[in-house]
Image 1 (cartoon, chains in turn cyan, red):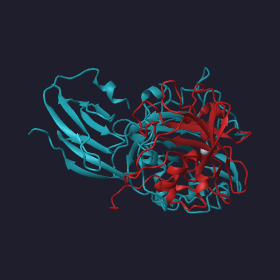
Image 2 (image 1 turned 60 degrees about the vertical axis):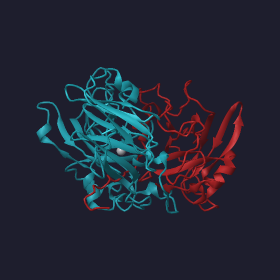
Image 3 (image 1 turned 120 degrees about the horizontal axis):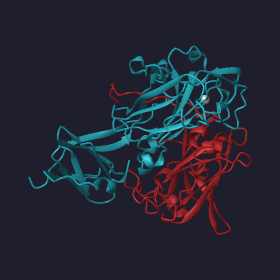
Image 4 (image 1 turned 180 degrees about the horizontal axis):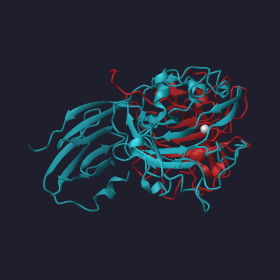
Length: 321
Length: 195
Ligand SMILES: [Fe+2]
């Protein structure tokens, strides 16, 4: 996501202009925005003040501003305004508890006192804005991004999906980081001493930005299962670690993706920290044969949900009409 | 909440190998070796240069050097994403000393949603093996005693636990260092927030 200034390098012909005001939650209009449309019906705009982040891309307008905490979006050629309120409370009963004696590492790393619930300030309701300039072109291709003259060994797969928030709004232009073991279940990490060999052509590290619909994809090798020291030798099912930034520090989430049909899933103490069966199901990617690449790659679909925020819709009020 | 809301994807531990995805060079990969995610102070950044640092200990008092710390903060004027200051940092612990550090600037103040002014602070999130869902805390500054006193968040914290959120200031050569040692469990346990 670029800064607003960069968006106006090619100004469209001004066919229609309207002025909207963006209201902060306290009701005082702080900024005006001029919206224009070119001959192809594409919308563009200019920004009024106060360093709001305004993004106009492919005909749709979105405004994100960390002081006013509001968002404008074009819907059916009318501008609808949204006040973005606080993020919904995390449903902590849906997430694993901090302490689970069957996952031994939690025993000394789980706080004894309950979390202190507090209201959100700008620091929770904003977050880092990553753009393509932060990424390398091979970041979403784990088959290619660590090759030392050969192809990595293993099952070639593509993982794709959509990131939505709890209100089913796409989480756009946000960073996803992934990391994983190689096909033999070995991580390229100085602390992994599992006897399965490293693959000289596989690093296991990638990242990708979601697009304007919250969609993402990356290509990789299906990771192997591996044993780990827990209560004796437990086994991790094949999995890919996911780290998501969303649009705000409040939405930050790290989780793991599992593979449909893996018999190790119900045996895994880490998966079993998740209280509800429905929560586990959310983390299991489905084989997506409709998208498979003939004679090349299998495809898995994995959708994610981040926290949503309360919002109030209201119509725009064009000035001078 | 209406019943048709989607459920948030459940969290899972970042695991012991989080560095591969978060900071591959630290894991030993020959990838993104130029990245210094714990240095937020470029030449164009306005504000007082500071270093925040600390250790992280578990319930047995042992160092937890595999924890990854992430920080998010306002710029020197108390704004987010407006001045070109990136505001977000990430640090690994030194495997031997357990010390993490982030070179940044002291953030400006800004109001809470209620409109009440907050003391300056930096949000911290912790990710690691044995942490099923990341822990969220705040770092406040020892030399802001007066505004700390009036801060709406600090005021909601039991006074006996407040010191776990306040970084101690000292000088190291010309550098201003704020140190906050985090305790995951037990004696001196850090206050963690649900926000
Ligand atoms: Fe893993």
